[in-house]
Length: 204
Image 1: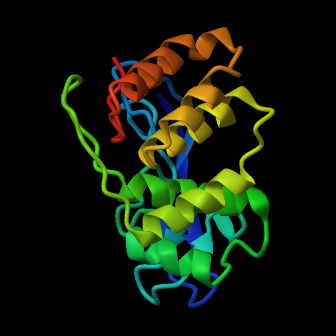
Image 2: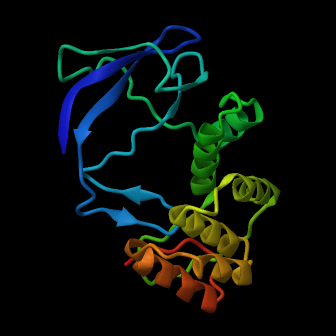
Image 3: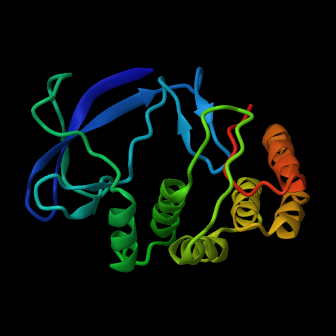
């Protein structure tokens, strides 16, 4: 992982300053990956596209707000930008904080989906989901937004269907994936479908 001087961001609502990692390059070595796309990798931090201001509570697009590159590598006096929690993400979506930008809406809804998902840390651990109304509404909205002509989107679509216990639809989406780099993940999600496991799995 190679870092440059961090960015100092200004909240567009109140002007409070935030710190954002300036990642030049990274890699996923040593990372842990789950079937809903969530991951933890020491050399590849997940820098949020949206953050919640620590001072006024506003949710803002990190990529669009005013920012400058710090002259120092350490900016500990400013809080790090952080993704809003589940309630914050739900509020941001309800208030159209993405301003009808489809890519931003997809991003927020995927992050909300991931926040709602319990995930196992053990590879063979089984987790069963009981989706509530909020979970289903967000999942259905995501299914309408994702482009099924892209293989990675098909993997996400299949996973959403599996989370909703729609195993037939999940298998149908998996069957359309041709990208060889997704072969292993496709197989593991397919196996979970066959076992009628609807919860997120940790990839091996």
